[in-house]
Every structure is written in C-alpha cells, then in structure tokens.
Amino acid sequence: MDFSIVAANAGLFLEGVWTTVWMVTCALVLGLLLSVPLAVLRASPNRLVSGPVFAYTYFFRGTPLLVQLFMIYYGLGQFPAVQQSIFWPLLREAWFCALLAFTLNTAAYTTEILRGAIEVTPAGEIEAAKAAGMSRFLMLRRIVLPSAFRRALPAYGNEVIFMLHGSAVASVVTIIDITGAARLVQSRAYAPYEAFITAGMLYLVLTFALVWLFRALEHRMRAHLRRPVG
Image (cartoon, rainbow, N blue to C red; front, side, top):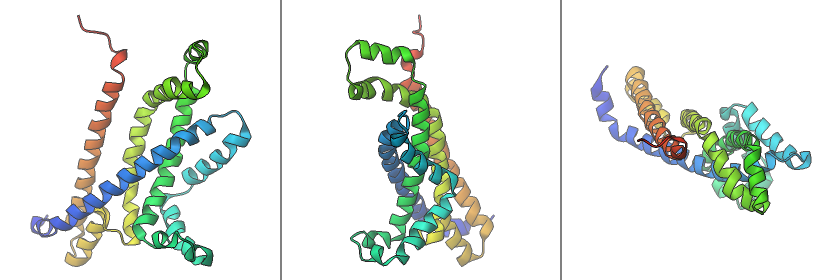
C-alpha cells in the first residue's frame, strides 16, 4: 500500500469525513424529531390514524436508499410544478436531496423501532399513570416515551450505524463524502486499493465511536436498574 497517495489526499479525505458527519448527524436529528410523533400515531389502534404512517414506513423500509435518492434527485426535477415552486432552489442541490432522502429513510426505520417500544410498555406503568390522574399527553411525555426510548436504544444504535454506512450512496450524486473522496482519489491516482482501504478505515473509526457512544448512553440510562454496590 502506497501511503504517499493517502498523505497527498489527506485534505480531501478530511473534507469527506466532515461532509459525512454533518449530513448523517442532521439526518438523524431531523429523522428522530419526525419519528416521535409518527411512532405515537403508528401505535394508535385507529387504522385511519396509523394507516398512513404504516404506508410511509412500508415504502421507505421496502425500497433501497439509493432508489429513494434517485427518485428525489432525478425524479422531482422533471415536474414543471416543482421547478416553479419555492422549494426548487433547494431541490436542485445535491446535498439537500441527499439530506432529504436520508431523513425520510431513517425516520421510517426509527418510527417502527419506537412504535414497537411503545406497544410493549408495561400495563402497570400505564395504569399507575392513569390512577395518578395524568392526561394522555402528560403520560406520553413522562411515562411512555422515556420508557420506550430506553428499550429502543440498542435497536436505534444499530439504525444510526446503518445510516452512517448507507450515507455512502451520496457519492453517486456528486457529493464528496468519504466514499466520494475515495472515488475521486481512485480516478486521479489509479489507486483503488489505497483509496477504498482508507475510506473503509475511516468508516470503521466512526462506527467504533458510535458504538462506544451508545454503550455509554445505555449504561447511563439503565443506571436505575443496577444494584447499588455495598
């Protein structure tokens, strides 16, 4: 492996890391904010309420992220109404289309993760909240959602890692993320081994950081379940 090629393109790889980190972070934050109310609606026994949310999650979980990105980046621009709308200055930008695709995709998965956690909330907690005179909104805010977040954390940690790895598709729409930087180095230096080994190592470092972060978060959120020492 020729490390001089990697060293010569270190700035490009750092740019790719920054692009990957901010895009994935923004998508995860927006997706989580969107998924919380959707998960509550999805858990509703009323099919008129949960049905549209199910259709949304079924579509985005049932189709590849790359196809979703192509539909947004290449598909929306063919409609004159979209080109003449106030959203066109954003929809014609590759970064916004990628961010939108990532957000909608991760929101669909997170909705189903939270929905499952909400539905297995112990009945005793619900009855205790009702006996205390809590309203439905207060019960959701103080009992159901905090309890659901603790149960959903391991599965959500996996979704965050999957989103990080899935973000590599952004490179196909000219975005210089980690994979995009590797492709650019490969085309310039004709060194695919050096380019993609470096990209893989960068993804590995980011994944390790996420695993450590979620383990620490799980440890903190489950502190009340551990027996006191002594």
